[in-house]
Length: 224
Image 1 (cartoon, one colour):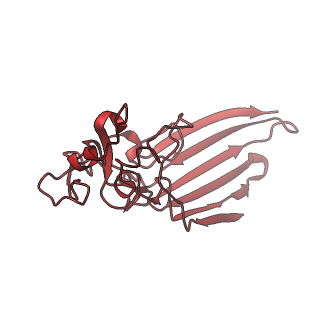
Image 2 (cartoon, one colour):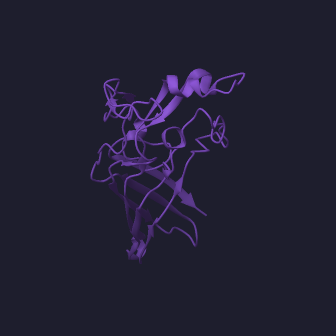
């Protein structure tokens, strides 16, 4: 048996990332302080961080009967993912003098006087894509009617793909770059760790809860 599916995402745009892991709702200044904040610099529209253009899954199951010696099942699966989107944005940037001059008298400034500043559209950049191949082997032997032992061998990430698929994206405003009409820097400087993997999830994850390179799992049991 051979099966598969392919997904093509055409558009996944917005101007705010409203959710995160274990955080179903995140507050923001979106739409607030219209005299001070600048939509195209503080919450621009663009690709959201879970935008993924391509996703492909191909799998097969091959069964080889072995007579009184049981049966062997072999099941490969290939997963191909294009890269997700990320933005060039600096956090904790002080409000400019021009922004502060537009303050009509709010009791509290947005972000305590600081803002997240975007350099370009949201999701303007793309992480690298990757592919993973897994193999599963299942051997079972009938003993009496439905009773029989079995053993399963799984080889995850067969090719030992440890490609960097995400990385640190920290940028800071370039104080020497030209200012826009709001007194905000238009250029950025990459942080010291920009482009470097700084978490386990920055490598291909072949199963939730597991990270790393090639892994072999063995399980056994008795079927009744």
